[in-house]
Amino acid sequence: MKLGFALIGICVAAWGEGKPRLVLNAVTLPDARFGARTLFAGLAAALVAVPFGLILFLVEDRWAPLSSVDGGARDGLHGVVLHHEGLVTALKVLSTIGSAVVYFPLFAAVAAWLVWRRLPRLALFVVVTVGGSALLNAVVKAIVHRARPVVADPVAHAAGMSFPSGHAQSAVVAWSVLLLVFLPALPRGWRMPAVLAAVAMVLAIGFARVALGVHFVSDVLAGYVLGAAWTAAMIAAFNTWRRESGKPPVHPAHGLEPHHEKRLAGTAPLRRDPT
Image (cartoon, rainbow, N blue to C red):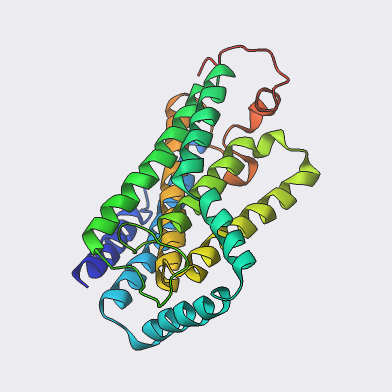
């Protein structure tokens, strides 16, 4: 409970520190825009982190409605999948797709390819965002130390603690990173389908973890929120880095390096980005 209150308190404090103040000295328009965007990115990360602190508080406080949802989903979904071997296999495949066994080699290859395409800034973003998310999840799990669900006749097993779901958090981070990096290379007509496919995969992986009986609903929700907060913080850090390199910040909806769409598509010559 104390950790939940602490997280909410930190977010409120961050909000207070980040409130815009009236400054009378002259500033340039680009600086003002950058400051506003950085402020909004920081506030977005704080606002996303508030629900995580709230979920954690309710979990540690054993709030009855949330406990009812957790227990009902655990027992109800387990009762369904227990008698459908094909469904269990499909859920395990989804779970494997959303695991470190797939993500770490995948993003190591993505980072190496970005370095080869002379996009080291994007490569570092990939490594720090994906690796940092895994480390953050491990730290929070160790602090909260919530046991995994216990069901009769389990169809799957998972090691470690339960809160927050590492699969759910990694799904949000991984699919967000793929979109942020490669969205500029996609034709405009494919961008919305790519976003919808990413959302579907994130939801499917979270559902699989609950249905297999290895996570509570609240674990998955907390993983989603923590993953979103971490991604928002990394986007803000990336934009700060761009600004310090003399480049304007970018809107995440356009990807992190929208002016390198040809290089991301593999059609541009390999020239090192000067910044």
